[in-house]
Length: 64
Image (cartoon, rainbow, N blue to C red; front, side, top):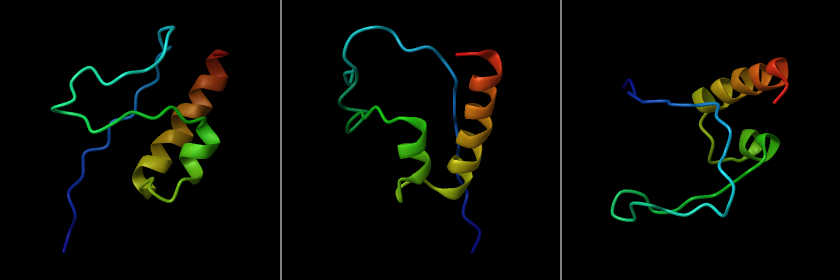
C-alpha cells in the first residue's frame, strides 16, 4: 500500500558548541553528518535524499 511520510528538511546555521539531545523523552539521539555522508547513508530515505540535494544546492547558492 501507500506509505505516508513527513519529510522536514531545514537549512539553518548551527549554534556553537556540542550538539545534545534537549528532550530525551522525545528524541533517541543526535548525529552531525556532512552532506555527502547523510546523502549516501543507507538509512536516508529517497524522499529525504531528494530534499537534501535541493537544500545543499541552495546552501551553496547563498554562500553558506
